[in-house]
Length: 275
Image 1 (cartoon, rainbow, N blue to C red):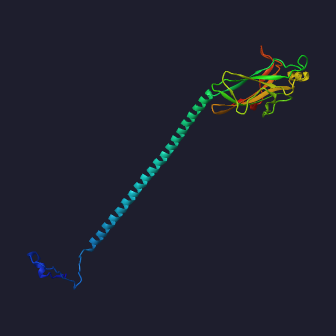
Image 2 (image 1 turned 90 degrees about the vertical axis):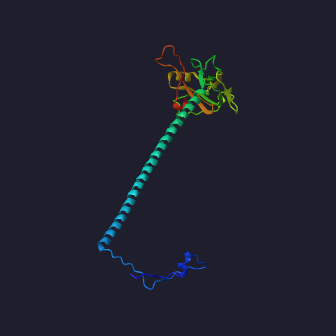
């Protein structure tokens, strides 16, 4: 192997000797190419290649193992997220149930404190006939309207009807203006009804006074006498309604001791409800 000619200058040789102003000069001669001859046996080269390949395979395997472990971690995190989501749904559902329970408690409290406007009916034990001395009498029913709740009730409207009918009432009630109850004066702002202060209203028969034949038909059961009404009122922020219906019961046939003919609660479901 040919050696490279290195020729350092005299100044460079004496640089450490204390000369001033000298400049180091180095000349590199590359007249011949630099050759490195590695005399390595072939079997060693094969072993070296195998070793390097094995290292690459090992590195790749470690990468796969790392990727798989990362995937497992991601899947575990997704499972936790899903579980957390389900838990959140359960928490939301539980909170919803608690809110619903609280709402029901509040509603129950309001219902216990609100006004409840009820009615009681006053009418003779028998139907007056259009015979003397009742010839000039107009038949009527008196309702006592009373607030049996704890809070005042603001009466908004009262509608009643009192009339005869040849058959059972239709399913839906039909009310008329209070032309047959001239004493009812509510006004545009309502009428306050406080607990313990009942209010009597009178409802007049649309037929005036009943003929004797009509009274006989009612007592025999082939004609009916109805009185029904609807009271709307406000209380404790609620819109409330009391609907009621009474039918004359002549007590034909078997009856309990002490029972007398008179009006009884009756009629279709839409005529009798309280909200």
